[in-house]
Image 1 (cartoon, protein in one colour):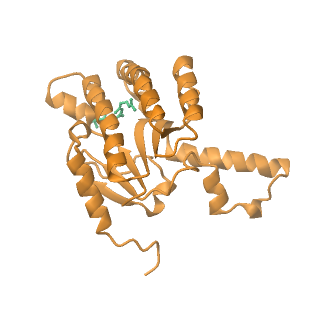
Image 2: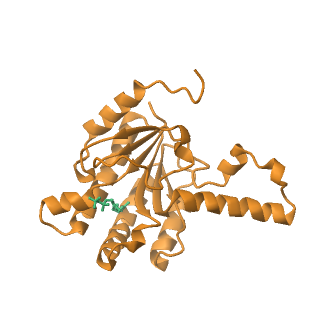
Length: 229
Ligand code: FPP
């Protein structure tokens, strides 16, 4: 069983287009699947899942679409609070400063109040980019070196990992990307170094528990050698 799964929630736009509906209709359906997937992971005994909800590049989308995703986020904050009451811990990965003040305050509050929850960890990547995360970690370490708290020689992979948003999550074992695209798109760049990938043809709003079970089965059949033999 993978301990930590990353989900690239791709294909919402195409799903809506197929139905001659606006793209935000697809995001709405995608957000519902996000909620269901948290439950499926918990039922199957996965310890943590990280969802790619909004990338550092997604601000380039039309204003109407960005606003639609922000509205969805506002709406889902209520649901996320409910999960947080069920012993689920939430971690928001990314630089939250560009979000509206009310959203940011809620996200920080949820992260803080759910910190002690132990049943499951749900990561939500918001204004997240893997490269930005690596730059951010480098910046923190560089400042420590400048202040004399740390020497450059003391920087190890383990120390670097402590500066990443995932520092309190289990190692990433599996990345699932629906929608037929076969790339990482700046998602969990450092963490995916030894992760397994499962690409599916289904669009994210059509993603079902069976797809998750099949992906886990495929993962279980793979031989992970981490560079060894
Ligand atoms: C990618 O599909 C999806 C996104 C950029 C946004 C994902 C957002 C959500 C599922 C909703 C908000 C999340 C939460 C947690 C409330 P796409 O638009 O690139 O699809 P396409 O490739 O078919 O155009």
